[in-house]
Image (cartoon, rainbow, N blue to C red; front, side):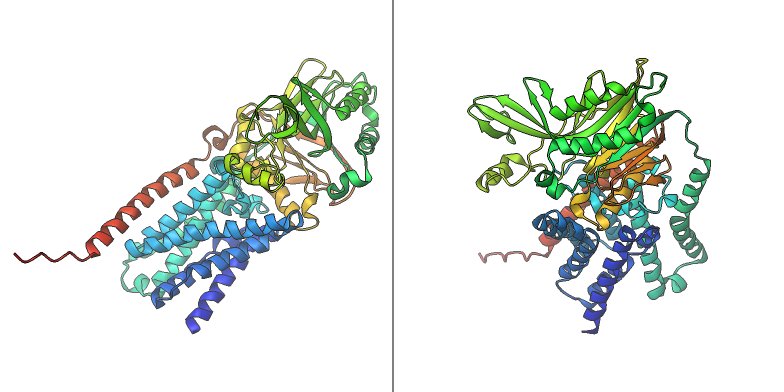
Length: 554
C-alpha cells in the first residue's frame, strides 16, 4: 500500500511539473527534470512487481494534458475532452512500449528506446498525422524561455525534446547509480568523472550555446512597415450583432485613423503592409475560376487613396463546382449538379486590384477538416454534417507585398494553427519568404492560457527561421516579434487596438531551414530499428519458452 501511494504521488508530481513550463513564463528549465518522478515511479513499480502500471502513467499524462489544454473545451467540449484523452493515450502507448522493452532488454537500452520512440511519435504528429495535436511537443516547453533555445535555428523544436529527454534520463540514471551503490561501489574514477561531466554538459551546455548565439546574432537593416488592425470582434456573435458591412467599417475606420499620414501621400517610396485577422470575412467565393467578394471590392476601393499600401486579410472562401459527381470526398452538395468546397484563406491585394490567395493547409481536426475523409465523411453525412471540410493547398506558397516601383517582398502567410508546425513553416522560407505574417483568431478559447501559449509558439518559428514576425489576432494578442524570438510589442487581450511598426527582412536560410528536422528523422529511423529488434526478441523468447510436444512411443 505504501508503494502504491508513493507511485501515484510521484506520477502526480510529474504531471504538475510537466505542465508548469506551458503555464508559467520562464519556467522551461523545469522540463529538464519533470519526468524524473514518473521514471522513479516506474522503477519502483517494476521492482515491487506492481501490475496495471499502465493506468498510473496514463493518469499522469491525462492530468498533464488537462492542466495545459483544458481551454480547448471553451471552443468545443467534446473536442477538448477527446484531445486530452486521446493525446494522453498516445503518450501512454509510447510509455507502454518502453515498459515492454524492459522485459526483453537490459541496462539503458529501454530508456533509449523510450526517448527515440517518443520523439518519432512527435515527428509523426508534426509532419504526417491527419489527426494531429502537437501542442504539447516537449520542445514547446521552452517557448517562453527563448534565451535558452537560440540553437533551435539548427535543430528545430525537436532539438528541445531531445534536450528534455536527455536531461531527465541523465538525472534519473545518476539517481539510480547512487541508490544502488554503483557510483561509489562499482565505478572507477574515470567512469565517475565521465558520468558527472556528461550530465553537466547535457544540463548546462545548451544554455551556454544559446547565450553565445544570442550575443552574436544581429539582424539586417532592410525593413518593411506593417500596420496591424485588431478589430476585437467576438466570433461567437460575429454575425448575430454585426453584418459583414459593419465589420468592414470597423476595420477600415481603424486603418483610416492609423494611416492618416499615408492617405494620398504621393511621396511614399516604400510599401506598407496592413494585416487583418483570420476569417475576417465569409463572403469570398470562387466561381468559374474567378474569386468574388464584396469585402475584397470594398478594400480595393478604399486603397485607392493609399499608394503603395497592401492589405492581407483572412477569408472563409468557397469554390463552387458544376459536376454530376462529387469532385472530392470532402465536397458538399450545394444544388443540382453543384458542389461546394471550402477553404480557410489569406487574401492579399492593393489598389491595383491584383490578388494573391493562399489556402490554409494545417487545419484543425473536426473543426476545420475531416480526417481520413473516405471513412469519416460518411459518418459526418449520417450526423448531418457537423465537421468542417476545409481543403488546404497541396504545396506551400507565399504572398507578395508589391511596391509601385515593381518591387515585391515575399511574405509567408501563416494562418493560425499552422504556426505550431515548425517543419511546415520552414517551407515558406524555402520558397523565399523574407518575413512571416501570422493571422489568427484566438477568441474561441477566451481568457485562458490557450492564446498565450499560441503567441509564444510564434517565437519558436522566429528562432527556427530567423524571420521577423508580424502577428495579427482578432481579439489579441497581436505582436511584433524579432528574429531572436523576442516579443518587441504586443496588444492587449480583448481590446480594439492598432499597432504600427517595422519588421526586418532576411534572405539567409538557417541550418534548420536548409536541412529540416534531422533529429526527428534520425529518431524515427532508430525507433523503427528498435521496434523490429523488440518484435524479434518477443517472438524468439516465446518460441524458446513454449514446451515441446512429447514424442510418441513406437
